[in-house]
Length: 356
Image (cartoon, rainbow, N blue to C red; front, side, top):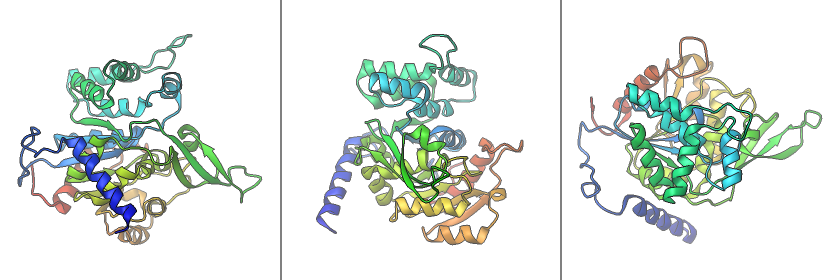
């Protein structure tokens, strides 16, 4: 191990101990891991893809943590970020809404925090949940404490954490951004712009280049039974987690099993024309040391199963195909079907026995 690698590993362990208080599970209010216990699951992503995963996962485990991207610079989140210098709250809000229960309390609060004002003034298009989260950040001065408090108010079935405590700028190298100069590679800045960029995204990076991870997020990944990455906007919601060094180290070092959940269709703009295996290839370019255990895909979204199997094997992963899309023809996940797929994967590939 090089000196730099040893330093990074030492820092990772320190960050994780800060996040979990460096106490045994019993002292932290947890229970010793036992056969039949609910799995500890950490889901990473942002936007609607992460929301779909969380809506499914909360149906099969009560020990669920969401780790959310903090690079959004559009809409209400972008305005609050620019004006107040805060983390963009939008993806955090969406994750909290997805964790709300199906009872009247949960569904009412989910609608309230997602509500957007319509006006001719400054409140136009601001989301109630964004304002609530930012207000608590200002009141409490602690990102994690404030999000935990919102979660308790909503009765959320899980915890929501930002991946970093500093707002990030996403930048992409894009080939053919100008159709008249198809071989030129230019830098496109901002998550909202990257998500819709014309041309072919070659790679993405974040500014600052070495952002600190939230200690509780690192601790959750290291303590998990399963880590779920995706689905979601590949370059703007999924890959950014791999660009936070301490979080990538945790994903590499954790003893948890790792499942990659693929999208139902390419996204216009950043992944237009991508095959399922192409998604894996670009993930590997950004995190060549990352290993996976399972790649989950909708069976109708994989025209070439052999190529996907080959791509997954390079990560050490098996491919699980299952019907997870809604039956209305829209490219959206059905929470019940996705929950059933995760449940089957956790039981078939996990290190712990059935919990239900």
